[in-house]
Image (tube, rainbow, N blue to C red; front, side, top):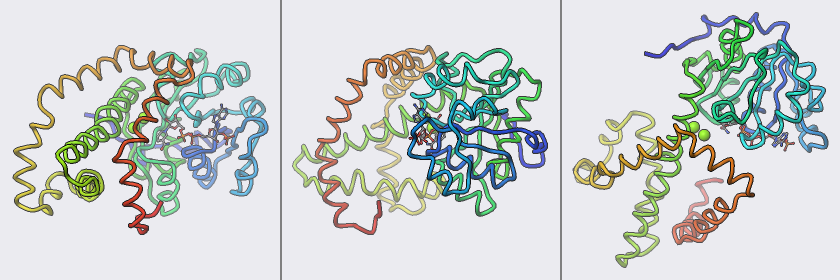
Length: 330
Ligand code: NDP
Ligand code: MG
Ligand code: MG
């Protein structure tokens, strides 16, 4: 079973005399740096020269510092930049300027696990990954709560790497909810698999296939949209709150019977075999190589496939119907 740590298991004093440099001020960077500062820690936000974000950082009461200077003085360097930007930022700014005893912190393991960033042996390499978007990390912190986090150690040069990760998780509020210990390998592979097979890839393919089946059979696209896309939110919210049990408590008896008898036919054993192949490609690095090369080639497959989905009837009808439901919000 996994180790889970809470505030009492952390030693915030470890961070008392440390200077934390958060690289990036997007979803995670914004939330981490504000929470760390409100926890009384010494934090600066490292931004590239000419970044339009300097003013925003100042207006939110934090100190923006040009990236090279920020790295030179940092004891902990947090990579809260897009994963695709991190290897170049490491090569250009971090590698030549990082202090020998400094730690590097990640919120996702891709670049470390697949060798896109090769740290020096004298630096700690740790992960603190909130299991939620930055906005939630910030909002819950302000309410005295926190988002559960994962923590991991890839390199323990100081002998204190794990305690450092736990102290950081305390600083962003994650230890209030619980910090689950994992490895860079496990976090990276399960994250990629989840988004590919279920959350993003699996779900959007399932919705499109259901929508197309109804429309091809002559039903109104508007009906297909409501039945196969719009209503998924109600179902997901129930599962999120109380599992399949709560969802099945709220749907009709007819829906429930259709669910348990037909669902397994939509995701038959062959689908699981394909999931297994997708997982193999993640585990043996084929997916990572494909994605790194795709980026180097300026994203031709990425753009072509996204463009195709933008034109899908489900998206057109959806935009129109959401116009009738302004109360949905942005
Ligand atoms: P964002 O895309 O929100 O990061 C944007 C920030 O990165 C901006 O401040 C931008 O600078 C800066 N940036 C972008 N490119 C560069 C560059 N080439 N050089 C310097 N700065 C750059 O990142 P996220 O917060 O989404 O993700 C950060 C990390 O957290 C990733 O590893 C991700 O996997 C992980 N993570 C993300 C989650 C999420 O909810 N988004 C959840 C859990 C983990 P500027 O302001 O100048 O434009
Ligand atoms: Mg994920
Ligand atoms: Mg991911």
